Image (tube, rainbow, N blue to C red; front, side):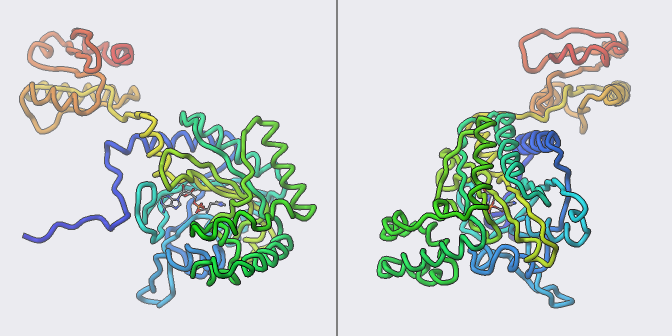
Length: 421
Ligand code: HAM
């Protein structure tokens, strides 16, 4: 016997029992984004490697150690499974001139790949719902995206998420802050771990993210960029905060929030939960006014975020939210004539917009009723010899204690919704 094969570590199947919750999140997100004028766009899962190296930054964890990169067999070109969606969307916007005439709000969803150590809420293949506003300079859009997320949480019934925001300023602000950070950390060089020493010159901001215990007091005393912003970034951040206050959205300004991708400037934000252990970030994003130019496009200010689907689904499971994809009815039948009547009845019900499963593969009345129950259907519709003779259907509610009733076959389509309620 050959050995059985298993999914790749960190890459999960979403099984039919879990899928309704995924579809619920996707449906609510799609409806919410449409309410704000966001349009769907789909970009490839595979892109050329330099897109991510240039877009995300070569000193980031993602580019340094987490990308699934391989050589195309024919051309030898270096290709990468996307670790995030923003770079691909910006590439598409540049390639198709999507945003030079007028700004564009878009969203996408799908698989992302990062070679991280798998744990609860962190996987090597994961799914994001990603939203981007391309060609918008003002703080109004940053705030609108955050307000939209607050609406999404409410629609999903999630009430315990905390919003953290920060501003990482403009390039000049960061240059000055970076110089003062390097000076600060150099004063405490002996307390840095190897990773921090290596990154001190290339990416000192990431040192603020370090969990290395001896570095914590040094990090706490480090100069804070959000307190040293130049006037344009300061005004932008004040604008975001005013708009959030006007919308009555609570937030914490977290001067340590730096995010793991290099393309950000000014506003950055994350929504976090305490319910998932270490993997607390459910959504994160911010402004990236320089990315278009970095990828060879014309200057185009932009702002966006992504939500982690797995983390959202886990949160809903923790909150005992259930979603069902069961049909309204499961048709149980015995004999050839009844089978034909069942198939015809099912098609009539589907014409009326209902989801109906017809028992297939035979089986005793008892085993068919078990399958009806397992299908999640609200009703079993039973067609046997007696029903055929009387041109009726026996309707048995499966989710309540209401008794079985006999309904004329011609009236089923009109009354099924009431019977299932
Ligand atoms: P990110 O913070 O790297 O941002 O990812 C966004 C969200 O994806 C995280 O908050 C988390 O919920 C989820 N996520 C990230 N990595 C994993 C993983 N290994 N397993 C499960 N979930 C994960 C971005 O990707 C940016 N592109 C967001 C953005 C869009 N910024 C501007 N526009």
